[in-house]
Image (cartoon, rainbow, N blue to C red; front, side, top):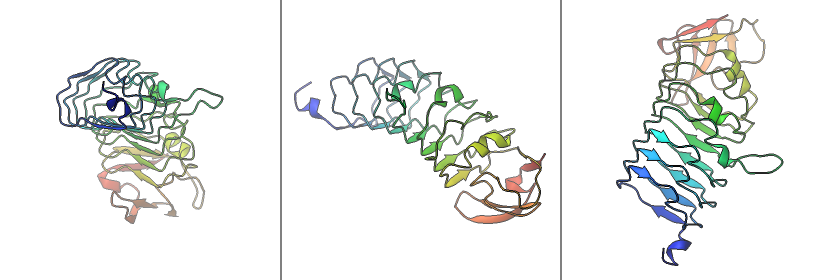
Length: 250
């Protein structure tokens, strides 16, 4: 690369044809902060595809055909804060895929604040890939055929989580445990629009504390909850009538 190219901080390669992102394809762009690869017909991300991009903060991979992400694909991305993988064909995130995003040290915490995985082909929640994320603020999993949210799905998330989108999925059952895990975070919005076939919550007496923040912000009677919809509006609904799905108290 020419000297001025090695100083590049923003690279826009949208609407190209890159079926495979090869190993070390960007390694000379050491000062790159923002990389735009939207709508570039990408199908595979090779091991070390972004190696050398130690200053990269923004990575846009929206609207491609990604179905294969090789182990080590995100090597060297310890500064990555915004990762957009939405509108692809990703079936799974393998264990350790996001580990390179963790900063070495005593706390071993990543910078990743925004992760968009909506409109993919995830059939299960990628708990093994995401179990060490601690400072995530926004997670979008909408429009994936995920049927079950495991009990430990959100266990690692700290108080930073503000937005969690689980709408338009194929969830068959959600236990209270993953929702209670985020009830003490800074969550502002939990979207479950057209996501559930059933929601199981524990038996409780009127006035008991502890309902998941966002999903049910205030219990007004033993059989009514206040729910925020996809437009941010609040409605008090009968249990069992939420978006034509079934909410069941254990």
